Picture: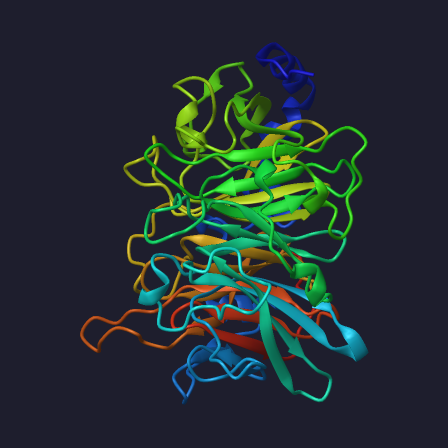
Length: 480
């Protein structure tokens, strides 16, 4: 059923009071998992006094990770230093990660490795494990890291021969969907197969990962992340691209299809329907780009438009739509499913967008077919200093309330927490300078996720590729 501009204008009258309130700081604070805007942030000392967060970050004598007092970290994998079960080095460029309960009380972590271009140019590509290779010319893929109860760690290949495995998403049935942020055709950059697909990786069943099959019905484009609606079966996906800006997608499964381990692999390449959004404001006016929303609480109605050629045989998917046909956004990145809908991130917008910002978090409500702006960061005037975060990327829901945000901005890079009331607080700071003393450079954080028991926070430093386990006196964050 089409959701028209007239429908949204009519329903917005009913929801109008809530929409108006949502624009205030107080309402932002009451929104589930909403992040703080600059106006609600306080200094570390003030937060500690209010009982929000864990206090100031303490410099790390080892020069890797600054943490609050009482917290510790452990390096689980380090590209070029730790080794897989096969004896080969851990691959580099750690990205999206999810944690699953493993055998005998262990934790299984599926870790993406975001590498592209000719395989020969990658220092530590994902090894071409027998039976697990899609394209032998591509350097990326996933590894599975098992953290056992005795503290020992094992790592093996989940899939190899893919490109730019960026984010992805866990499924309700316990598998990982890894996304290629790459659209190389066979013959480009040395590739022997087309890329730009989603693949399923089962962390608990190595045999299920043999003979990797691209899930082509999700489309071929520069994928970032994916979540699954456990009730309706829809998949929602983000695209990190520009010229023109990327799109948010919905895939509707074929009638009668039931999800489960390995069942996506049984579907035809053209199964289901892939669509892109067309948004309208409360006055029924078309919205061309999500960056136009400058106030938290902004609500857009969403209609869905069929993708003409999801495999992009002649034209990239996002270029198949003309002006006025779909709504775009820059740097569509991490996603997670919660509160009955999909949260999605736009990390930043610059000259390629109608309005500039340093991050937006949106919530898509499938029942109401609306997108609501939960947070917007203005452009950070000096990202080299500790302060307001910029460039939210991977995000996870915290078992202690609110969110944990992996920052992928400019300058200093943090893991931030955000309470349900909208307060942000630092959890970690990357102190590994991969630049020079004169021009310091710090890699982004990626793959933030909690262990199934909630006791350990896992996160990656993408360059050179380090997986960390963070432990400490976690506590329920106060709603203030």
